[in-house]
Length: 229
Ligand code: OAD
Image (cartoon, rainbow, N blue to C red; front, top):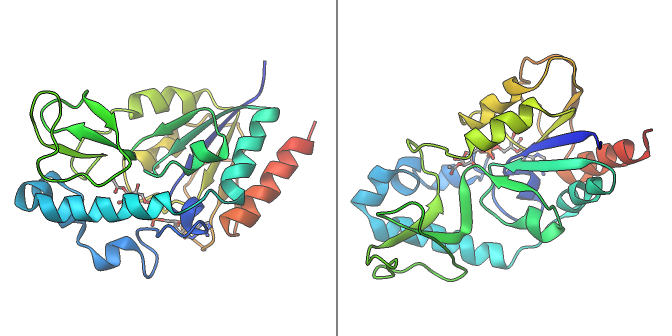
């Protein structure tokens, strides 16, 4: 049986692809109020504003490409059983070739019905007011907003519990429940955290910190794991 690696990623892994993070200086939450564009209240107050925000993000994503860090994680699959659990709504892990990707916070290239969360459609253009699901209700971005449940946590938590190696890349680990996944890891397994900044480290045993940008840090760690016996 292959060793199981679980990788938790955040906005930092896509930063070098030209996609803004949320909380770094110049990040998305500096110029937008979270509650306006990423909450159900915001949606109820001004659908057009929310649609515009995600339409811009979607358009930008289609012009971006995966970077070395995304590709390196896909290469890990040559030797390991790898699951990527991402907070990112981009599709750069998939485009780099990762086979098992869980999107905790939804996907930018999908739209979903406002009345039935199971009606989800692939969507690579703007979502407009008047675009409706097969039940006639307005479509919204397939994004988990603040205050909403994170249904895929139930899928992700047992996978993390089962991991033999756990890697965290480019997340400030401040948004729960995603950030809490670190605490589901077994005590004895090796854990790695890669981040460009000197962020507060989670208090888990056997954690090593690689203080590098994702393209450098992930490439280094993947090489190490692929050459190790
Ligand atoms: P943040 O913006 O909170 O954190 C990004 C992290 O990436 C920080 O720790 C940075 O230091 C690090 N970073 C920046 N550039 C990097 C690089 N080139 N290489 C490596 N690390 C780098 O983003 P997330 O933690 O992903 O949710 O944010 C979590 C959630 O908050 C998002 O999924 C989003 C947001 O609100 C929703 O919108 C639902």
